[in-house]
Image 1 (spheres, rainbow, N blue to C red):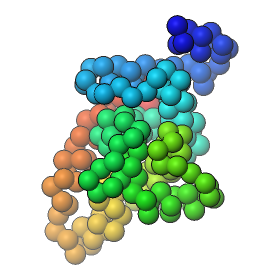
Image 2 (image 1 turned 120 degrees about the vertical axis):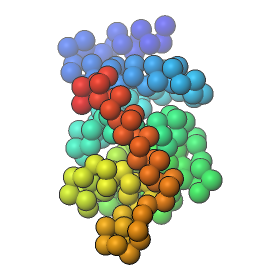
Image 3 (image 1 turned 90 degrees about the vertical axis):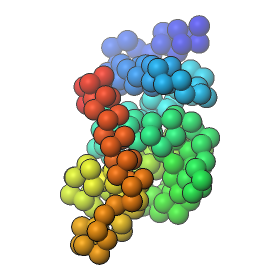
Image 4 (image 1 turned 30 degrees about the horizontal axis):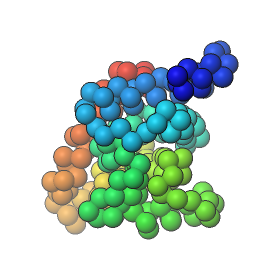
Length: 185
Protein backbone atom coordinates (compact mmCIF):
# COMPACT_ATOMS: atom_id res chain seq x y z
CA UNK A 1 0.00 0.00 0.00
CA UNK A 2 2.79 2.45 0.92
CA UNK A 3 4.55 1.60 -2.34
CA UNK A 4 1.42 2.47 -4.31
CA UNK A 5 1.11 5.80 -2.51
CA UNK A 6 4.74 6.69 -3.18
CA UNK A 7 4.57 5.61 -6.82
CA UNK A 8 1.25 7.38 -7.44
CA UNK A 9 2.52 10.66 -5.99
CA UNK A 10 5.31 10.99 -8.57
CA UNK A 11 4.89 12.09 -12.17
CA UNK A 12 4.95 8.86 -14.22
CA UNK A 13 6.86 10.61 -17.03
CA UNK A 14 9.69 11.64 -14.69
CA UNK A 15 12.81 9.84 -16.00
CA UNK A 16 14.63 10.02 -12.68
CA UNK A 17 11.69 8.45 -10.91
CA UNK A 18 11.59 5.61 -13.47
CA UNK A 19 15.29 5.00 -12.77
CA UNK A 20 14.73 5.07 -8.99
CA UNK A 21 11.93 2.52 -9.32
CA UNK A 22 14.18 0.31 -11.46
CA UNK A 23 17.04 0.43 -8.92
CA UNK A 24 14.60 -0.14 -6.06
CA UNK A 25 13.26 -3.27 -7.76
CA UNK A 26 16.78 -4.57 -8.44
CA UNK A 27 17.66 -4.17 -4.74
CA UNK A 28 14.38 -5.78 -3.61
CA UNK A 29 14.92 -8.72 -5.96
CA UNK A 30 18.54 -9.18 -4.85
CA UNK A 31 17.61 -9.09 -1.15
CA UNK A 32 14.87 -11.66 -1.76
CA UNK A 33 16.96 -13.91 -4.03
CA UNK A 34 19.99 -13.99 -1.75
CA UNK A 35 18.00 -14.23 1.47
CA UNK A 36 19.58 -11.09 2.90
CA UNK A 37 17.99 -9.64 5.99
CA UNK A 38 15.71 -6.89 4.67
CA UNK A 39 16.27 -3.87 6.91
CA UNK A 40 14.65 -1.36 4.54
CA UNK A 41 11.04 -0.32 4.68
CA UNK A 42 9.73 0.99 1.35
CA UNK A 43 10.45 4.63 2.21
CA UNK A 44 14.06 3.83 3.17
CA UNK A 45 14.50 1.68 0.08
CA UNK A 46 13.23 4.55 -2.06
CA UNK A 47 15.65 6.97 -0.36
CA UNK A 48 18.49 4.49 -0.99
CA UNK A 49 17.59 3.99 -4.67
CA UNK A 50 17.21 7.74 -5.13
CA UNK A 51 20.63 8.36 -3.55
CA UNK A 52 22.23 5.84 -5.89
CA UNK A 53 20.68 7.47 -8.95
CA UNK A 54 21.57 10.99 -7.76
CA UNK A 55 25.17 10.30 -6.79
CA UNK A 56 25.78 8.03 -9.76
CA UNK A 57 24.91 11.00 -11.97
CA UNK A 58 26.70 13.60 -9.83
CA UNK A 59 29.98 11.70 -9.52
CA UNK A 60 29.86 9.77 -12.81
CA UNK A 61 30.05 6.32 -11.20
CA UNK A 62 27.83 3.62 -12.67
CA UNK A 63 24.79 2.44 -10.77
CA UNK A 64 25.92 -1.14 -11.33
CA UNK A 65 29.28 -0.48 -9.63
CA UNK A 66 27.66 1.26 -6.64
CA UNK A 67 25.19 -1.62 -6.26
CA UNK A 68 27.95 -4.24 -6.61
CA UNK A 69 30.12 -2.59 -3.97
CA UNK A 70 27.15 -2.29 -1.60
CA UNK A 71 26.13 -5.91 -2.15
CA UNK A 72 29.59 -7.26 -1.36
CA UNK A 73 30.33 -4.81 1.44
CA UNK A 74 27.14 -4.94 3.50
CA UNK A 75 24.48 -7.05 1.74
CA UNK A 76 22.34 -3.86 1.82
CA UNK A 77 22.49 -3.50 5.61
CA UNK A 78 22.78 0.22 6.45
CA UNK A 79 23.67 -0.64 10.08
CA UNK A 80 26.49 -3.02 9.19
CA UNK A 81 29.81 -2.73 11.05
CA UNK A 82 32.71 -4.89 9.92
CA UNK A 83 35.38 -6.46 12.09
CA UNK A 84 37.70 -3.68 10.88
CA UNK A 85 35.06 -1.10 11.99
CA UNK A 86 33.95 -0.10 8.48
CA UNK A 87 30.40 1.20 8.69
CA UNK A 88 27.15 1.40 6.80
CA UNK A 89 26.01 0.30 3.37
CA UNK A 90 29.28 1.01 1.59
CA UNK A 91 31.42 0.10 4.61
CA UNK A 92 33.35 3.29 5.16
CA UNK A 93 36.18 3.50 7.66
CA UNK A 94 35.92 6.59 9.89
CA UNK A 95 39.08 8.11 8.40
CA UNK A 96 37.88 7.51 4.82
CA UNK A 97 34.45 8.98 5.55
CA UNK A 98 36.05 12.05 7.10
CA UNK A 99 38.43 12.46 4.15
CA UNK A 100 35.56 12.21 1.66
CA UNK A 101 33.39 14.60 3.67
CA UNK A 102 36.24 17.11 3.67
CA UNK A 103 36.75 16.63 -0.08
CA UNK A 104 33.12 17.50 -0.83
CA UNK A 105 32.79 20.11 1.92
CA UNK A 106 30.22 18.15 3.93
CA UNK A 107 30.99 19.04 7.57
CA UNK A 108 28.01 17.16 9.00
CA UNK A 109 27.31 13.55 8.07
CA UNK A 110 26.36 10.25 9.62
CA UNK A 111 27.77 7.09 8.02
CA UNK A 112 24.69 5.18 9.16
CA UNK A 113 22.39 7.60 7.34
CA UNK A 114 21.70 5.99 3.97
CA UNK A 115 22.02 9.13 1.86
CA UNK A 116 25.26 10.25 3.54
CA UNK A 117 26.84 6.80 3.25
CA UNK A 118 25.97 6.46 -0.43
CA UNK A 119 27.24 9.97 -1.16
CA UNK A 120 30.55 9.47 0.63
CA UNK A 121 31.03 5.94 -0.70
CA UNK A 122 30.26 6.98 -4.27
CA UNK A 123 32.61 9.96 -3.98
CA UNK A 124 35.33 7.61 -2.73
CA UNK A 125 34.72 5.28 -5.69
CA UNK A 126 34.97 8.27 -8.04
CA UNK A 127 38.20 9.30 -6.33
CA UNK A 128 39.68 5.80 -6.78
CA UNK A 129 38.61 5.81 -10.44
CA UNK A 130 40.27 9.21 -10.84
CA UNK A 131 43.50 8.14 -9.13
CA UNK A 132 43.74 5.03 -11.31
CA UNK A 133 42.77 6.74 -14.59
CA UNK A 134 39.36 5.13 -14.90
CA UNK A 135 40.61 1.57 -14.43
CA UNK A 136 37.60 -0.04 -12.73
CA UNK A 137 39.49 -3.10 -11.47
CA UNK A 138 42.19 -0.97 -9.84
CA UNK A 139 39.51 1.28 -8.31
CA UNK A 140 37.72 -1.77 -6.87
CA UNK A 141 40.98 -3.13 -5.49
CA UNK A 142 41.74 0.28 -3.96
CA UNK A 143 38.27 0.49 -2.44
CA UNK A 144 39.08 -2.72 -0.57
CA UNK A 145 42.75 -2.50 0.35
CA UNK A 146 43.41 1.22 -0.16
CA UNK A 147 45.15 3.16 -2.91
CA UNK A 148 48.56 2.79 -1.23
CA UNK A 149 48.34 -0.99 -1.46
CA UNK A 150 47.45 -0.84 -5.16
CA UNK A 151 50.32 1.57 -5.87
CA UNK A 152 52.75 -0.70 -3.99
CA UNK A 153 51.68 -3.72 -6.03
CA UNK A 154 51.99 -1.69 -9.24
CA UNK A 155 55.49 -0.52 -8.29
CA UNK A 156 56.62 -4.02 -7.34
CA UNK A 157 57.12 -3.13 -3.67
CA UNK A 158 54.43 -5.75 -2.92
CA UNK A 159 54.37 -8.79 -5.16
CA UNK A 160 50.62 -9.43 -4.86
CA UNK A 161 47.33 -8.29 -3.37
CA UNK A 162 45.94 -9.82 -0.20
CA UNK A 163 43.84 -12.90 -1.04
CA UNK A 164 40.79 -11.18 0.52
CA UNK A 165 41.24 -8.31 -1.96
CA UNK A 166 41.56 -10.66 -4.95
CA UNK A 167 38.36 -12.44 -3.85
CA UNK A 168 36.67 -9.05 -3.33
CA UNK A 169 37.50 -7.95 -6.88
CA UNK A 170 36.03 -11.17 -8.27
CA UNK A 171 32.80 -10.84 -6.26
CA UNK A 172 32.30 -7.15 -7.08
CA UNK A 173 32.86 -7.77 -10.78
CA UNK A 174 30.40 -10.69 -10.78
CA UNK A 175 27.73 -8.52 -9.17
CA UNK A 176 28.57 -5.58 -11.44
CA UNK A 177 28.02 -7.69 -14.54
CA UNK A 178 24.74 -9.01 -13.12
CA UNK A 179 23.52 -5.49 -12.33
CA UNK A 180 24.58 -4.21 -15.76
CA UNK A 181 22.40 -6.87 -17.34
CA UNK A 182 19.46 -5.81 -15.16
CA UNK A 183 19.71 -2.04 -15.45
CA UNK A 184 21.54 -1.47 -18.72
CA UNK A 185 24.30 0.71 -17.18
